Length: 309
Image (cartoon, rainbow, N blue to C red):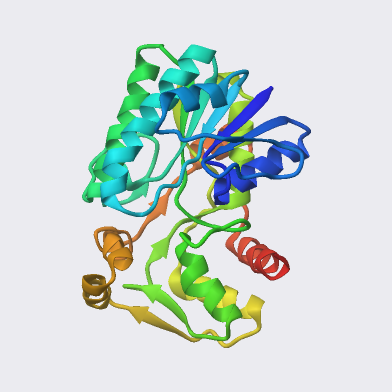
């Protein structure tokens, strides 16, 4: 099959690309800067342009929408609906299946486990945008206009992580620079993290399973969730430093956000850090008989990858 990754160059786009290439698949990478990986075709396209989106998808069997936009609600409101509409319309025109790599913002604050049947109840502006674009795709699925999958993950860690990854910014990079780690709001709460290579494996398995289409799937994520203290302790051990860290309280993030626009964009998402954040992927694990990477193994492999790259 021809696999086309829309939004190549990010953590999941890279993890997926190398997975597909390892499986000897035909891979096309689509990005605004013509991001390239040896062995894959590389195409430059602006996905806010329907003409360029359509051209980039010609000959595609399965498209993966893995776009990562700047963390700016103004950009999200304007750009995400355009990208989703163009991708849907282009996939319909060329006859490609679509897998949308999504997050969990549309669920809002959940009391208990997040599952595929958790209702949309966003408590953030970014969550409202995710509801809009997920609903656009779900509507096409419901009307049988397109074979598609919505594949969701929790917060990410693992190989190929980018500067948008909180564990990378606040733990891994700081310990490797011999600095204290940081944690948001409460280090004693359980919080699920999805390993990037588990995401790639999950997307590949879904793409090759016709029965998996036209459903929502939570990508494989280790259970039980881990608390901040335990995450930090493992990371410190693997980097050979003392497990020292500071907790950033909510008011400190809010105050910093007054002067820093990038930090201010994260304030509305702090609800994910002041209560347990439990992501359930048992549907996927049971269907595909899949065991996600444990946090001990995943954190160790992540640090090894960062050191070597």
